[in-house]
Image (tube, rainbow, N blue to C red; front, side, top):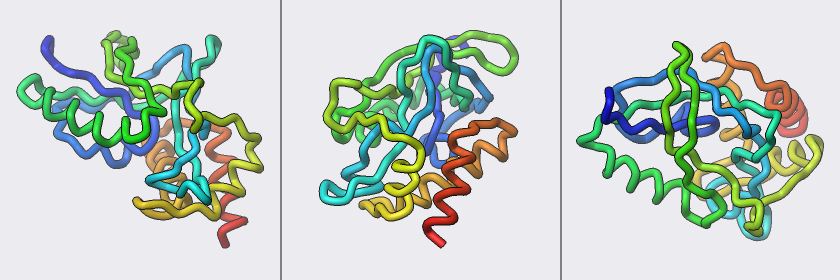
Length: 177
């Protein structure tokens, strides 16, 4: 798998990658935290009623569990085109090639989408504010609650833990009914 393109998923890519892959492995990205730090004005909210989506926020002491997808070289360009159309819709994400550690201990370089802290969609809200926003926002791809629920359910199914997401899941369920 020397010519394999690796893609790191930490949110919706876990449950809806949208591209062909030949390998799927648990992985850890160090130096970033998964966070609802990006205002969603397209997919899970609108300009008038922002939702929130996950992004990777730089934090030197953090690590984010996720999935590394291995993509065959013959579909790598097509996969990158798809990911760029999907993830770079508003330029709030930056595409980076970062080292991730696979569950078997191998380190690979993976295409990863991290938040641009200088972008106007970057935010840093407390968990209760996040819950209030997620519980009520709807965008072009559906309710913000669906995004949260699918992500948390997928993370749980992989036996990964994220205490903040677990808290948000419970609180948003209370708010949304």
